[in-house]
Length: 524
Image 1 (cartoon, rainbow, N blue to C red):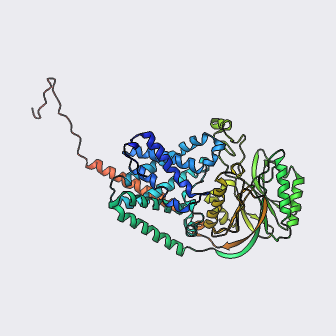
Image 2 (cartoon, rainbow, N blue to C red):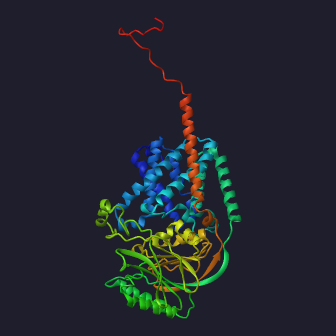
Image 3 (cartoon, rainbow, N blue to C red):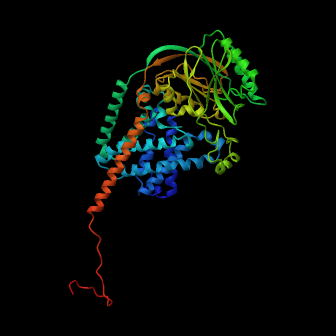
């Protein structure tokens, strides 16, 4: 992206270009899923930032690029949030301003080999800090982490088992920085190539030596996806359709039936008739059924989204209440200040209640499952903790019915591949309206996706695995390493500033003048 310098002299033009450059990585995610593009998608943005005339302008380029990135990877929210998505993107885009400063600091002008070598470590570390901060649930969660674009690349999934999606993000940004140097700084191509070679060597070693999940049998999991159900009493119609699709599974020797998010619109304690119908389905299929209740509870105030396990005698007592709610979709952050969002979009009219702890459930066939609800599957720590607690199968119940004709269903389904690879545990992503997907313990796809046009039930032969991946054992070590890099950078910069101040000559003091404006001569 080579633009005339005078054309970019306009702050507004430059800001628009930065936003467009920041939006490019969205093509690496589903639906386009151009995974290879992720390794060069940041290059135009980096080149623009390094060309900034000042550090302040570089920070603005980082900010507007971050705005473009956030709008692009969340563009499917536009019908729900309308103009509010730009407000949120502008606020979160600020997180990339320090990253822009660091890009300018290490790559502007004709950087030395030492600066480039440091930049190959510092800039990916700073990007990880941005992903870490915006991964906080209150800021929207870790949707669109650049490492998750590698969900269908087998070597990348192996690396995810070592350092999680964080390690993949670090790798992708490192390659982008090296490519930007190769393009823009001819005199520094040797350290850039050396950085690429070192990255390839380290990742190859991790790929070769990282432990693989050990096969430990198979289970048959059925996913029930009813599709779009509209009109009056849609909850009742949906339940009847799910019931009919589930009865078709009788005699297929399944070990668990999974319904999607909000598949039951009534509290089962208030509707014993529905509980009896579910128990009848469990007896007919010979297995437990994991449903998802989205209703006001009878035993405590408020609306909950809950994974509820139902056996041949009714609800087993195993229940997981969703802990991490979708901002604006399921609750309004600081409702007293931001409640007006309900008037400009499809924001939650009433805040749902949160659960307090994760749950591992024992299915009737001896299978231990770890349920998650909706975008909780985007949080690496949740699936990791479930694996640590003994879950043999991860299950995410989702919907995305509001975003049928966007890229959201495919993006959401792809995330489960990363969670499976990170934990060495297979994962089922079951939805109301598609896309539903199943992945093995290495993140490999099992069977076919159920698309957004499908209303059906499907059975998957899912391989189980045992053993503990490095990511489950050591956690977010890649993030901790990135923090250490930035702490060392801060210490080095601070010491350098202190040395410069100490070595600077003392300020010149003007001579004292008399009342007649003549200098006072020393000694007189």
